Image 1 (cartoon, rainbow, N blue to C red):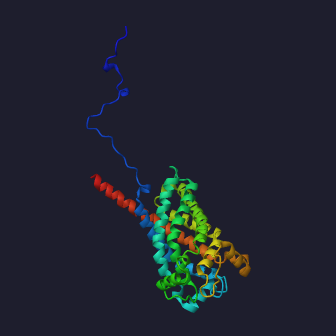
Image 2: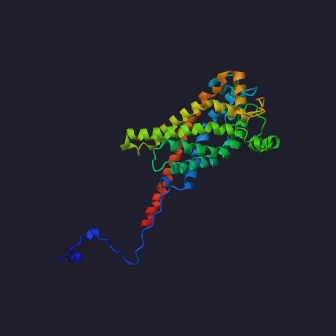
Image 3: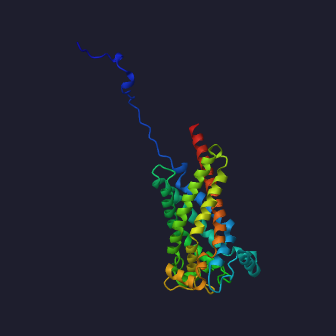
Length: 330
């Protein structure tokens, strides 16, 4: 005869455990990417950009002089001749002309650059932090946004870097560009800059993440102790590779930004094809790689400095947030 089983003979682990009337399920908030907030990425990126460009500005000046064609550039493509020419005619200060424009643009641009990259990487990765496609796409989105901020000051910076530049300073340069060329004068090279920086950044971030992951896998037990070396090495490798493959477009960008200044050619259409044809006609195909060595010498250490500073800034904020959380728990 079947009878109802007594509750004491039922397996308690199969029974739902009733909750008290005042029970409320715990609401968990998804942690921010890398444990940081958007504004913290912006501050860390801004500091990294300022440190990077300030430290490497003389090399950037040499590269700009070597890439500009016409009567304004130095005639030799050798780095030694470039440095000697600048020091002889202008002294050490000539290596730092335009640094004010860089300071005004690099901070905000890198704040946008890194924060957009981190947000997009989180969005595109799909939970896989080692997704190279997500890194590349995030880099492209980051450069499109940051170039819109940095390009106007980059134009002023490069014009001030030219030998015999007609501008007295950053403010004078900005005023004259607005008066003589309008807003479009600041964005004449924007399309070329994006077309250059999109593959540059895609290669840069993909290489950086891959090299960083590889270095950490080689010695995982000491990865945290050698964090600075890992970021610097990965950044240098990424910067050098990306700079090498995008030099021709960088030459085109310099031409468009410096056109019409102290003898440099002015382009009617402003198209990339028009500039490429002019460069090849005047200087041969070697003209497309003018300044490649100082460009690599700039981007390799610059990326090492930038990534090391950026990751150090992130670590700083993570420690602050961790200490704040611990104090709240107690």
